[in-house]
Length: 543
Image (cartoon, rainbow, N blue to C red; front, top):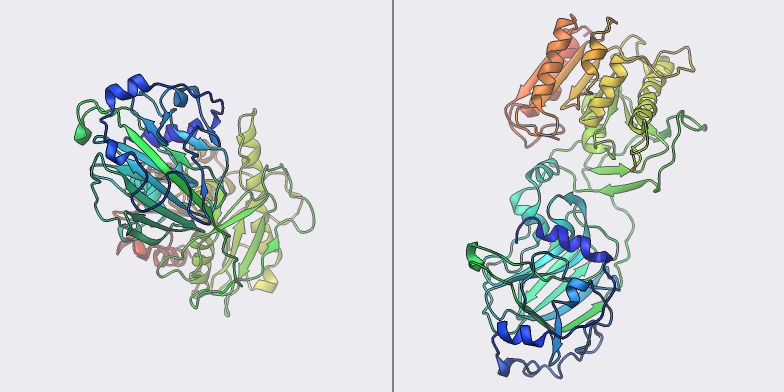
């Protein structure tokens, strides 16, 4: 299906009015009749009567239990206990959506394509926004070239796949099937938690595929039967109305698996205590968030020092954790993870680096800073948020200075670093005066590490204002499209013109979000060692 197709199927959920209109004349002009196959399934009992334990979500008579738009009503009919949509439509508003939402279930559906066609069964919402696709998973029904595919992985943007470290072998592997047209086929879909299985005509074609936790939402969602828009050209012909028929649509709701006690993997290391950044008080420049703080746990990457991969969102109360080496060398570093200011990837862009630096005697503070409000439409909303999160960064620096004696740190060797959006924050903290300092202890950094950073639009202006700028170490990948290397080069050039002690590394491989660099290329995996070497060259680490 075209990339725009699933986007429409996610939008039509608001259509809820329904009045069934017979369009039998149109149907009989388009649909070939296969009379012998319009009866009940051979040996499987009466048509549209569910087996024990199942419920019929199509009653064989009308669209009770389904939301429909006017477009849907104009393009579906019920005839002889069969749902039929033969006509040509130029949009995706004609799909059928259940009123009830389902999370864990077994869904059995008979479908028939009177001619070469394309359709799908949609369920559960997706977490990533896949532009031009939509917000629901789809099990594809297609007579040529795509039967059984899970469309979210098929249309997943390469940038998201790279950022999440998705490998081809981790995608659903479905045997190529081309269903015979004009014949009834049966699919059985089982969704429990994030585990999905599929059968086609009694044959298992996908066995307990595990959706990535960054892909699949765990909330209940409707079931959608797709009416595909007209396809012109390609393997489906010059002008294909994509006719589709359904019957025996049965569902059995499953009880969600009860989570057992949390068990850390053998590779998972114990994390230091997480403490409130602003003590018992309210953070300065506080603002409300619509949702409570949430955390998503992903599979840890190979070679991850922490063995974990968590992403926090809706953070309104910032926290910090300090990693203390056995023999501190006097250097302290605030680490700001990335996540587009919507998430904080606390492990892969926080604790992993802190644990690595701990082995090199550097003391690190991993900062879980406040995430942005969902609505930034009001005047100065972005500026107000940046002021608040920059205060978080300055407070983290100040905490290391305040505890310098206990931590074995030198107060003039406290730096800040960050990945992606965290790099944006690190630049803001390094180049701007700290907002409203309430302490005599400085919240300004003595050096900065910028790892595939977002570059603020005002950065050149901040550099050119004549104030003293701390040394900076910058890394990026040549093929980074989210934080383009060209912006890093321009930023570096501005630093050089201002006489700043700065070093830039551009790696040929890695793309955005390479974290510690493991598995992303030989040279990019060396950047942490280069960072420590630079700290020595800059006399920040004095061996």
